Length: 394
Image (cartoon, rainbow, N blue to C red; front, side, top):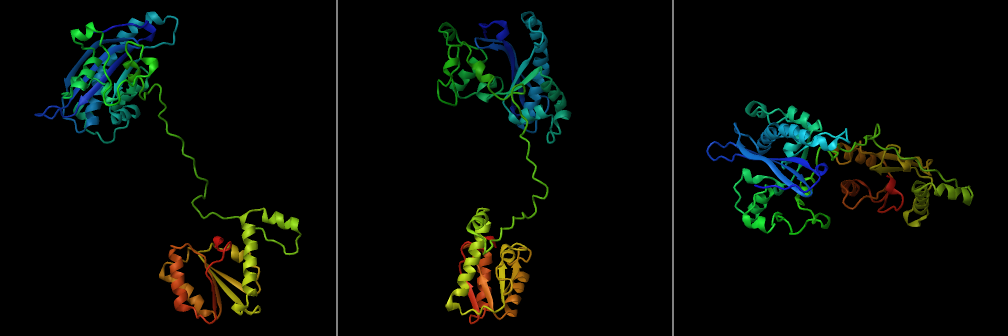
């Protein structure tokens, strides 16, 4: 195991990589922890401490084993590194009184990272009793700013201390990450590990000239020092937003109004336009000789799927000869009570004009059609299958 330093002291930083092998022992099912500590920079990688350690209790899950390993690495390596690093580097930062020693702590398990960052651990109830690990202690040290917790991918970690690596390519990569080289590699200056698990030569061009391009990979993950983990604020819905939305009533069009005022009324939106179309369609129905409708007759119009005080009722141009009845969602047309209500209205009237314009697959459409076929007398009943521009507001 060798190391090299090629950067000025201000560009150096200390790193600790922690990992765990869950239930690594086949006899006791106890997990194994490891920690690898080194000093790194764009042109430097110098290890100063490393080694595995068996855990004293049986972990119930991988995050529990990872948190135990994280706690051990922080106490055994992290606290020591803070003192050593501050003592060594303070002399190079005399002109920067705000400088303080920071240890970069690398972890690959996201569940353990979230627990360490938030201090919340509702499920791992045996962690403190079995391992003597306090999530509150880990969170306090991480949020203090002295330990920077960074998420690092497993292929950039020191897994070689805890796991048996069967893949020669991965083993060579992990071996070089901890600065263990063969004499031939040292002689040929073949010190950089190859990428594993993705296309080769993926290092950006601006990082290829450095002696330790893996430094940028290790620092590229989400960290407590640089990443904002706060969730975006939820926009509160206005009070009463869960209630029925009340649409603005359309502006009535005066028949004696001039073109300019009529244009203003129509420019208020589709509501006024629909009101005008409604009047046109009703007039068309009355003028058709085939319907044989007496204008002095009293009509009752049943509006299905309407809102209370529907638009057709509010904008009825024939209020003296026509009465509108709203069948709303409160009546629940699909229930037996709602169907009986509609059937009762139909049976009580001699003449009924049914205006219906439903979606092709609407349940209410099929129900109303069945009621109409069985209850409506065809002699005195007129049905408009489509009523464009009108029933869209019903």
